[in-house]
Image (cartoon, rainbow, N blue to C red; front, side, top):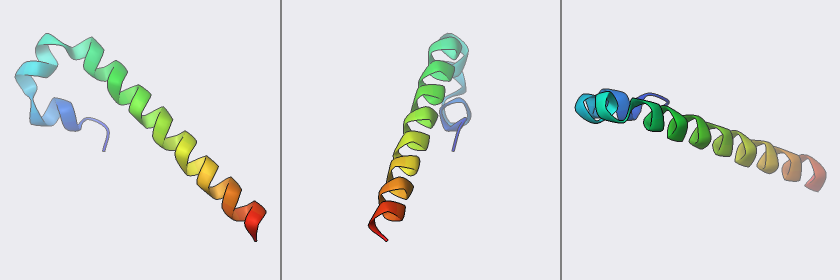
Length: 46
């Protein structure tokens, strides 16, 4: 999933490479936190 922006929009990645990488890293971190939260609640509920 990471790198979709760079693959889909090479021109945008070249112009905003740093910000795009930062957004992808932030999105990845948020997805990890959501996955961990769901797993945590599932374990507590069982």
